[in-house]
Length: 78
Image 1 (cartoon, helix red, strand yellow):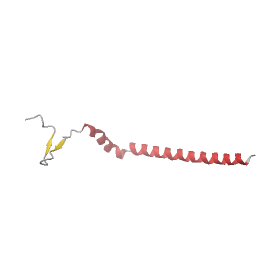
Image 2: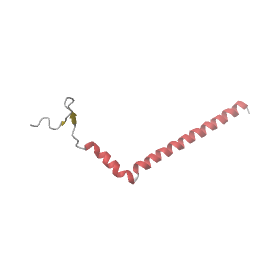
Image 3: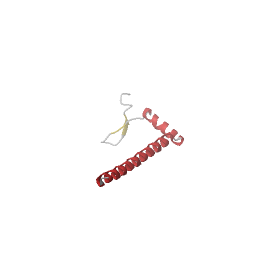
Image 4: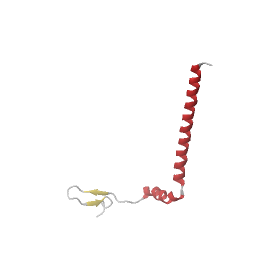
């Protein structure tokens, strides 16, 4: 057997082990994030965060000259 072929085989096995470890690590991270996202303790928080888009907040515009705040909602009203 060629000594160069033995070195290439050992190098290929080492890279295979490295790739396998990276795959296992990536899968563990994926399953960890999935478990965290679907854990029942986070459910209420995520439901509130999902509804945050629909919250009816007033947009406040600060007048630089006097420092007072006024609402954008009341601009067209008398």
